[in-house]
Length: 344
Image 1 (cartoon, rainbow, N blue to C red):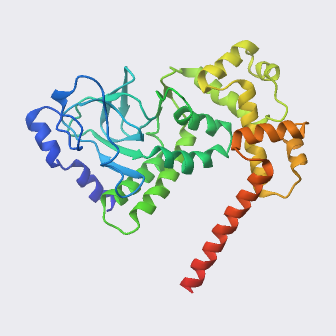
Image 2: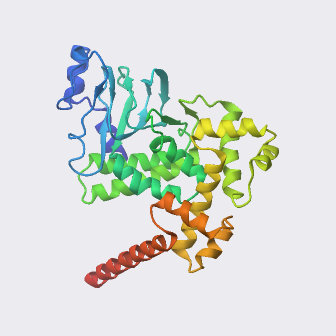
Image 3: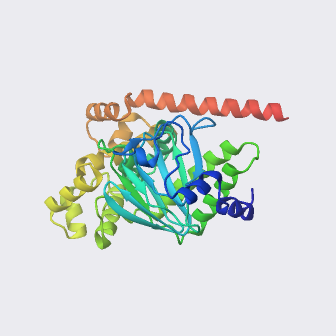
């Protein structure tokens, strides 16, 4: 499906939308979900209707009637193809504009007001276990700036977070979104494989956009300060101290420590440890350097202490981690070689 065909498909009034337009109430097209007039409290959206073809499901939100408060166990990414969308997320009103993206954690209670003819919202929903293992493990290896964005969704034990990306000016993101929708709503072979790869591209592009609003209420310079502070820790993790950090940004040490804890869920020490272990894991997987040298390189003088905290983070020793990564890489190369022989 090319972009012109996609545009016609999305703007066409489907059967559910026609009924909602006529009845002026939500006509839920999801089995086992209640109709609007039966709603008294937020309801849990079932998983079963969505993942019959794979761990990522893409659908157009039905217009002309409000979607009542609900929550679910999967990760949801909302993309505004055109117009606007007014939602209530955790009791806070959020207005999304064309080209923007909202990423919702599981268990977040949200509702959507009735959308007009020109308002087109695309729901991209992902199984949480797939999202965690396949996506965030890759992002986590890039540093604690990306780790923060990932943790804002997956490591918050209250699961009440969302992130709004002001992405309307990012042409590459809009292109990736349209191409992915063309695969989802078309009939080409290997569509699920293409959707998975486009999803990776989209999340990578969102890493560039960063957050512009969260339910923590970050505003203006404070948002920039947070990203800059995390970037500073990422670059100076080996010997960074809270005192050094506070001087670099002209903040009181207690203030900056409390701010990091409140907005990332981690203490300064935990953030430094995270970045050190990310770097150590990369060295273990990609070099043959002795483990003692790696521990020293990332800032640990005690090899025993390094072993202990590495095992706490990765549930295996540094040597086991190295062997595991080497075995995985060998298996991938072996399978690739088999595929090449078949093609030849």
